[in-house]
Image (cartoon, rainbow, N blue to C red; front, side):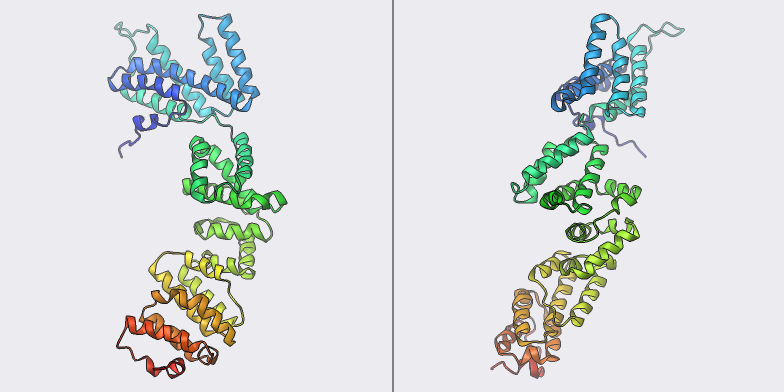
Length: 434
């Protein structure tokens, strides 16, 4: 399989604008085959970039470690003006005292430094030829520098998480829609995150939204939920793997109430997560879905498929004939899928709901709220289903408003299937005047 990694494309993601400008010289040398020059320049760009990042941390976060490293390096440069010792000291200090470099990245930089020395100094072989790195070696060095240093944000995970949470609290009520919030978060935060920072923020937001129930979390739950959802959309596979790896942490939920209702809402659009939660978490989710109407309608993932969920809801409707369903719950049910098949399920569930009416007033209300708004979506099979379910219940066909309401249904029947013999349904049509 060919290596599809693009140095040019990756270079566009370099964090610091100065480093990006300097790196263009590296790219120019590499493209022209001047690999020795590319390696020498690459080391200089990396060192400059590390200094830029330390300065960023000091100015933005007043980071004490960053400040101390910069002071130590400055003294070392003054004491040994002609020595490059400070460069090694810089890499070593950053690796030990900050989150900017892990062990592997530090080793890659040490290797780059050695290659730089071989390329920059008059190191010759037995034939008195200067060392010249080949294309593959140069490419590998450039790739490691890009991924391990240049494209990384200097943002500290713990610090940025706290800043983000505080920022979201201030922004609550400002952003009227998810689009505005998404644009804001991507510009100010998410575009600067590395994978570690993304995971840390995701983990924290998950806890605040789905695990904690104090007053502060309750007050900010909606905007934190929106931020979590936006972040999750950026890298679903990464976060699923994180949940799998830290199953117990992500299964530590609130006992019930609003946090679980929000979780059910989240899982309705990301059902793959449900199967990776611990059994005790599933019990909590299932319990809330069983007792909270809106959650019951939303928690389709419990049943595995939308078809099974529709069958479950239909059974619940017909067995709870006196239960009035909120209009918002029907909206939730409709929003679960945009497919034609699901829209037909929703129509049939509405028919069952109307057909299960146990009072004239209930039938009036159910027809007005559930049937009439969707009549223009009914095909002949939907109409027949509604009529047959109504034929079995005098609370639907004997009520005063039946004449007007059922006429609307007949009008739809005539529109979609003019030759259909609706008159054979004598109860449904008994109040309709020719």
